Length: 89
Image (cartoon, rainbow, N blue to C red; front, side, top):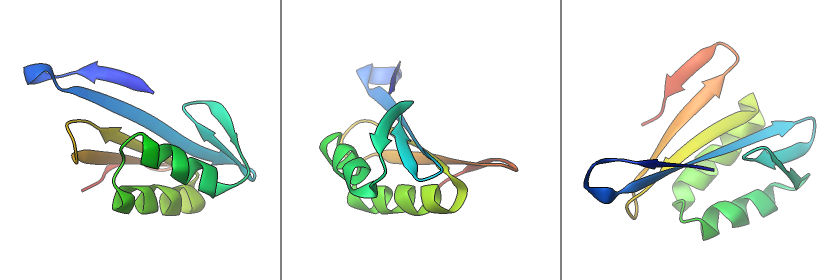
């Protein structure tokens, strides 16, 4: 997880979730072969439920997902695919 300071003292966190073979990783740390552990971690770090669902779906399809959170309910996702970067909504 990376912390970024932006204007007005709001810290942004970047959480990288990816899957290789059947194993999940969060910020480069092995997280097991079960998506439920990743879901729990994202919940306790304050990621909104709809963003967690998007993250796990994207990881299942493309193998990677990056979530940037900060300031309460604000969450922005950057999805990375083999063909390049796409900005989420």
